[in-house]
Length: 381
View 1 (cartoon, rainbow, N blue to C red):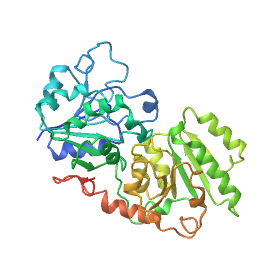
View 2: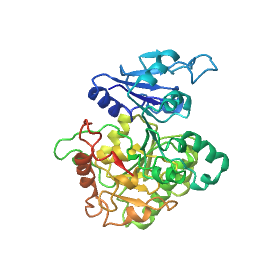
View 3: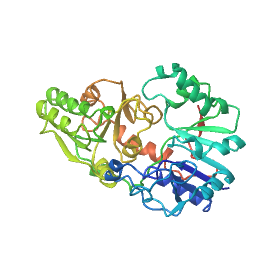
View 4: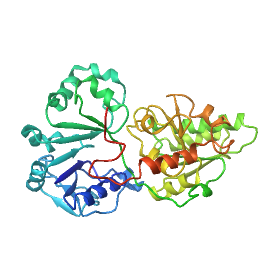
């Protein structure tokens, strides 16, 4: 069986899943990258190692008829440039195409017209709010791209708990939406690892410092904890940078918490995972614009108890309230009440969520991809 995965670019979050497909299909797998990675993500170390199955769609393709020179780095993750004729043939003759992370429908239009199987793969449709579903212009476009294929062999891999609700609003994919997600690297640890490396009271946050990631909530959480805990038995590390970096540093100074927060700046994926392995608690303060949040996967695999806003896509599917993490309501001041409560977390009377998190991950997420799909993930919603 020949399978093609079409997406905007190949990154470290997709690499383990694609490696598994390549092995399972004995080489009959191709990842088609449609655009260069943004410079900001390249600086963050998002570029994955090269793989023989990655191809780059040349700009003279059906999806880039305007022509022009390829930008620097556009082929950095691919071993070959595939011209229009080649990849159009690939997309049409493949047994299955997975299409996600790319807004250009021209890549799959011929296949849709021919009624060939396609699995769409994406995050929620209305990240800014479902009120957008009432827009006549938006509804017309959604009908063109999605609803009119409700009876065709087009299925949807839902990368987030709120995806099915959004697509139900436009009456798309009835009975054809499958619970899916992102599958970053799963690490296997020896007995006692990585818990014997955890630093007591350690709290980690790692993200771009932009508005919908809400780094200010982490600083306010530090202020709250410093005021209400009898002893400062915690320390927060905020990895990352971005347009709100200076503002976040300034807020930390204004609130007098620079002694309990460390700002190491941007770090690569390996350094972030190392920090997770040393931390007891991982914070995710993003709002509903966080379609999935692969850091939840990585933090749980690293033995962290995760405290996350309930509106990020991964949280409702992966976190069981007060068992392996905490879901908090949107627009609360970070996780102040939750982290403060001594009955919940490791440094405060042994919250069981840290070992529970890693044990759950080992049981439900570390099994290899099999001929029956990803265990525990391919479920109808």
